[in-house]
Amino acid sequence: MDARFQRKLEFLDWELGVFFHFGIRTYYEGHIDWDMKPMDASAFNPTELDCDQWISTIANAGAKYAILVCKHHDGFANWPSAYTDYSVANTPWKDGKGDVVREFTDACRKYGLKVGLYYSPAQFGSSDQNSTDYDTYFINQISELLTNYGKIDYLWFDGCGSEEHEYDQQRIIGAIRSMQPEILIFNMWDPDTRWVGNEDGIAGLTDGPETDSLDFSVQTDRKDTLDEEILMPAECDCKIRRNWFYGEGDKDTLKSLDELWGMYLYSVGHGANLLLNIGPDRRGLLMDEDVKRFTELGEKIKKEFSNPVCTFDQFRREDDKMVVDVPRDTPVHWLVIEEDITEGSAVTEYDIEIAPTQFGEFKTVFRGYKIGHKAIVPMYNLPTRCIVIKITGKRKDFKFRNITLY
Image (cartoon, rainbow, N blue to C red; front, side, top):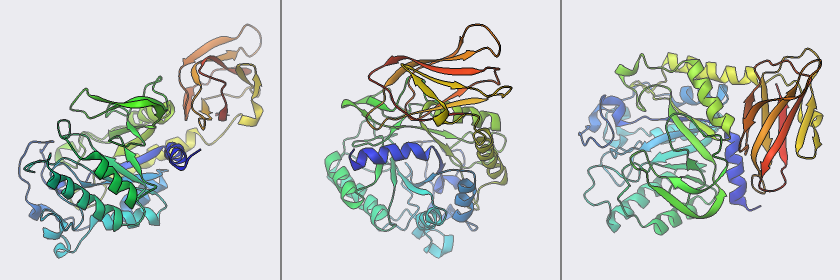
């Protein structure tokens, strides 16, 4: 197994991450992508900025990684970039001496989270984004982010706005890989992970960990085809409120715990990662309600998956079945199945069968498709004395990394 493949597998074990959309648009409510409205840098002044609050909150709730928007489509740099005047260096915040990227990366390392940086390749107001000069600007800014802040685990490129643009992809990716050889790249040009194709936290039952094509952005149906089907973990980016950036008008749009729980089951429970966005407010803090809701989600995950009824060593293989006997009078809530995908995924279809508690034939209660990294199957407290995972479709012989009944 090569090192890059191993890093992709490790990415799937991160499972839960948080996106932080924060920047000049935090201070200009009502702007939407590519509306071309000017936003003066003088408005940026997060007088109580506390990335420790952001990261400690999500770390305590079980998140494994975080991603900061460093430059969105507007071009505003959350670090003092030498290649633009439109940055934190020309704001009232800390008299132009501040650096959001520095405070964010320091906080991630303090709390043991993987460090992710978002960068929009395209930006409005640039005269010619198809020129070599723009490629140089692009590489120069990325170089600042990848050489001044230590090891960066994940670089998140947003395809929005780049649908018709031509970049010197080989030059750009070559520079990135030379500066951070172990970095994971999201979705564009030489990707390690892929966009799931929506912003609602939903991975499909048939998506699987491998693919031979990539969805490009929300603004196009375009797909980028790959030379072959390869391991390309899916990530579900979605929002805790209506918009990505903070807005006064979004105060009543906080998603309920039930909504977030559903998104978790439809993302992580379908073998993908969940990347949930929280927009810090104009003080530079997470709002109390957002902290409470994300903490509730973390507590819910821990509660539901902390009391195993049966563990992997209690399951036995019988041909194309995995079978476990359930302790008498024990309610079961969840069946969590993890495939061993170190040599590629194998399962394409499976049934879950249960035996009645006293007499009668086995009944199929769930039909699934690809398993991949993880499948979370609801069991609804069904009474049973035996549970069978019956593999009904496979590309080759299957192996499991773990199976747990909760």
